[in-house]
Amino acid sequence: MRAQSITSVPAATATPTAQSDPSVPQTPPADSPLELAALAYSRRDTGISARPAAATSLAPEALVQASAAQNTAVIMGPSGVPIPKPSYISSVFNLYIAPSYPGSIPFQLDTPEGLYPITGVKSLPLNVSVQQGIQILAASIAEQVAAGNTATVFGYSQSAIISSLIMSQLPPGTPVDFVLVGNEMNPNGGMLSRFPGLNLPSLGLPFYGATPENAFPTTNYTLEYDGFADFPRYPLNVLSVLNAGLGIIFVHTKYADLTSQQVNSAIALPTTDPTQKYYIIPTADLPLLEPLRLLPVIGTPVADLLQPALKVIVNLGYGDPQYGWSTNGFANQQTTFGFIPDVDWGQVANLFVAGIGQGLHAFAADVSPGGVMWQELAALKPPTLGPAPVLPTPAGVIATLQTVITDIAYTISNSAAALYAAALPTADIANAIVTMLPAYGITLFLDGIQQALSGDVINGLVNAIGLPIAAATGLVTTAGLIEVLVLIQAVQGILGQETNV
Image (cartoon, rainbow, N blue to C red; front, side, top):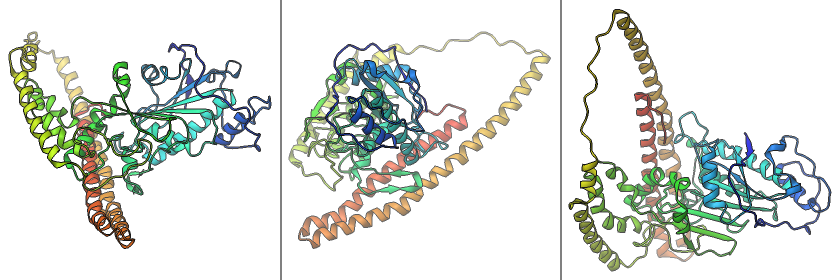
């Protein structure tokens, strides 16, 4: 995998946040990249050179030299983006890193970033891709520390998983900070932390758990309704789960496209440690209504009519009808899924009724003269007639026939490939639903019985019955949405369109 220093992004001069500790004692020789990082760090102020790792190539242009030790921003892409574009590096660096780590040097790190079947039928499953990514990131951190630099690791989506998992493997005191966005291991909201102990081997999808509570200084940004990083706490709420699923498409993909104003408007969430900074960035519209908003003229008015009341129901999936994220507990501590939220149902009813009124007002404004509906109507342009057709020549007819025959053969081959390609992930999803999900439900049931036998009878029985139902509802709904994405990819393959999920 390729790693390179990016010099086109301007950076202000300042002292890096992560500081070295020359008092760390020397350690025995090390062979792994993580051990090399500790060894190099412990010797950086003593003049003793660390042994280079045999599998690591230290290209001079890929490192910021120790003679000018600085903080290096190691930037990785999200799932489906193994080689980030310069525009992506520049965007995330300026949005999330430069404001808190001025003077940092952006540094591109390429990782596999496969997420079968979402990133394609022939892509790596998550567990294999993540394991390879951990090895690549470990080597990169070791290189930076050996060069005398501190590091700020930026992870987005899958690379946030890689970053979270490597925290427990790095030696304490390693000079590294983490900035994470769209983190599936977000302790209070990440899909992979909501369902502890679950594993779907047919999809290569282990639910890794939560980002460590306070292993290293961490800044975590989450967009409201991002289905990967802000999954509902109460998955029995089907509308909330559907909204989160569509949030994977309409919200999770937007972190690099935000404005600095949006990032600066992020709401700080309570944590147990000042080195752990967790933020939620509000999302204006429900992802659940985004397909409706795609309809011309009438789509936005109808969505605005439904949204205020619907948002109350969706937010209940997070435990508070006023917020689209979990407000219970600390943001850096794992909060697993539950059965039914403990809320004031009278307040819920009042908010729902108020939402109906707000929706009617928004709809009236949209359809009034000068409103959204009329603006879209005015933007519509009537079709124009093209030039008159030209009669083909005999030679042109033969060339056209040759092209048509080739195109037909290509279409048949491509369509067949798309259809049987969709069969494997469909079978893998079905496998997970009929094998691992029932096993997970039985485990939850037995946990509830154990809780009841331990003296907490009422809550234990409620959990024994309710949690398996809630887990099945949320996971089957999410699996159904993934299957829809697989079928969309198949249709795009049949139509000869590029898949971009």
